[in-house]
Image 1 (cartoon, rainbow over the protein chains, first blue to last red):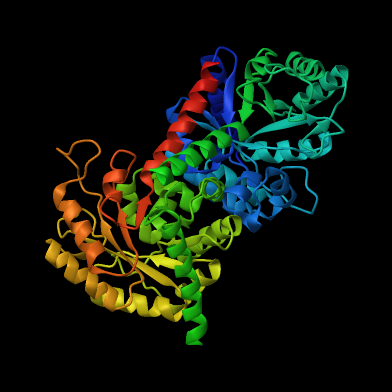
Image 2 (image 1 turned 90 degrees about the vertical axis):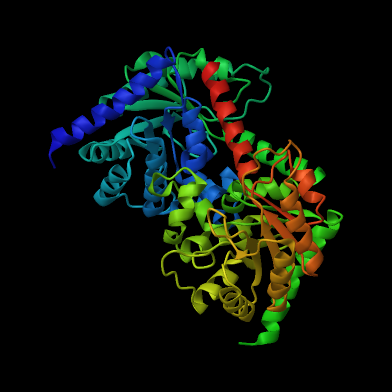
Length: 279
Length: 279
């Protein structure tokens, strides 16, 4: 491959990310769920000012009613049955509608922590890059796996966002790190192997936490990550209107929001239907 | 084929329609657009009380961002490029999520008034019936074409809803009939050839009409159709919160609503995104 062509491709992509963060004075939103995979709703999000989108395969399980599954928890268990072809089709469609200036990172089978063999071949990276992905949204569970993925992604001009999780997380969505010290160390290692954006999984239970707050230990973890690296940082999971400000105050750059937005779309549709039925 | 098996299949399907109309004291809603093709939003609609859904191929053009198209007008011009396979996948997914008691009628390439050869083969009817469709949502422009379609649909246990339009309509979505007399005659002919539900295209311009009203000539056309036939009747196009009551007062049984609901979903998503970006 012509490595400089693909380095330029990544550079242009990261410019979109930096612009988005600048425009929001240090933070922006990565919009996922229905706004990542339905071109109509992606356009509605972009028209409202969103400049980063994330289609992903578990959300596509739900969008397509695959095997009758209706919860994200079940979707995570069979997401590997969605094909790279399907994710390329989704990405190409969303890209066609939102234009070239929107950053699109895509979750594809093989890019998460897998429970069945899910090979990620060179042709899959090429296919996703050609479908219009700027990057891959990944959830590998070891530095070794992540490094292999990052190298291949970079070869084909794709950026990578990758995540840190807790060893006790219900679904493994990242490389384990428990204390703030461990988080700092792991985040730095992820940056050293070339990860373009580094995130924290934050979707654990918030029991006992006052509205508008996030748990102290979570705040410390996110802050540790933010301080440790120079690349843009993300927080993903459990972010909603109530705790958004608390997340933002950690200094994290990109807040990943999916379920909260899908919930509002579903609620609006439910209300519209109920209103029509009542008339 | 075993004709009685397929007649029973259609009878069970029409029972769902009659139940829906009874439950709403003479009228119900056929929900289309995003509630017809996105399993998440189909479930939101059904949870709110909707019992009739309509996935269709022009809406799938928009859902998939096919060729970057964002308006229904453009989608209508290339809808034949969506495949029966895609519509079967959509139908199967929505059916898997909403369960067997919901009536699903599906728009497929070949079932509308086509501008390029779009063969509708026996295997396509079988495929749609097996994917979970109760019926086909059709827009043929002559009695002859409709009769051929109805016969084949019935052979494979699918009901058919078909429409009457104006010769001056921008897109041809039905058999032409201008005066109330012509509407009565055409509606009766459609019923005689076995059409299971008969509808009126109502999506023309409403210029000069007071809010909450529909034009007098349209009201007369819908009423003429309603009086002429015994099968359930539909109205499709331009129905929204403002004129819903006026449409309902014509006595039509099934009000087809798509764009109005999609608009509210898009608006809710736009507002959610804008609110997050402002926080």
